[in-house]
Image 1 (cartoon, rainbow, N blue to C red):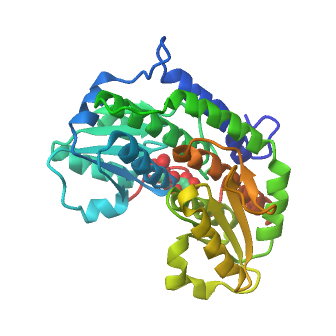
Image 2 (image 1 turned 180 degrees about the vertical axis):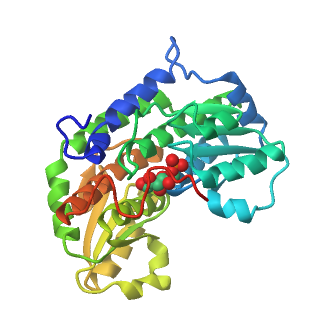
Length: 357
Ligand code: F6R
């Protein structure tokens, strides 16, 4: 079922605009409003603090989810790595709500937290691509991703689907709380779908950039600030797991506190600049690494480009940029693995779902 594709990963990257449209369709009622289980609305508005629990790429989607929920629905959110939360539970609020994000719905680390929080009597929602999976059955409510089966070990379309569903959830909660938003998530996601398409059409450009940056290197850095910091963490994970290049996703401002010591001649550094408030400061960080010999590349959002060398992403709503900025990262990783003769869909030491703790 790979069709004309050599790898599931590339097929799944390409499917992302379709998945966005599917989510819009599934979460829309006849009047064009958000369609969501009223009970989910209720638990979302009753909670004084939301705890997002996930692993790997789903954890990275959770980081973006925190930004979306806090910004739109004004509920504080904590995001936790499942395996850490399990053994080192923080002090909980009075009315916590747990959101489990899991593509497979079978991740043992996340399930072990769910078992604990259920025993404590706390409500739970699972956001998953597999309704009927363990985490879906055991949580009180399920929000499906509608991304279709994800076969490649490296998660791509599930990440963007998770962020899209979290966007809808955040806006629905805001509406339920009577918060006025100048933001129609279904319209904004449609803009995202078209923007994704235009990026996917530029594959060759990302293939050559990937060759230039990653064909022979042993190390790589991704830097960003604010919401971009969340996406660069995902970028580094993607590159590591399929190309075996040691990569780090770092907060731009934190580099000078130690990590910049690792920057040497020709080390690739990819910077994301999709947010106006950090556009100048992240570019300052890029200058610092260039001064130490790094091979730097800046991916910015239309309107924020400051040089003809920038890779420019089509403009989308400032809170939704991760849906767009992750696409070049996925493509750069895919081509890096391809050029380095790695097994793209089945990287060494990894399984699609991790059912042991
Ligand atoms: C990375 C990747 C893993 C998973 C993680 C959680 O590409 O696939 O990091 O994201 O194992 O899996 P799920 O989302 O199935 O709980």
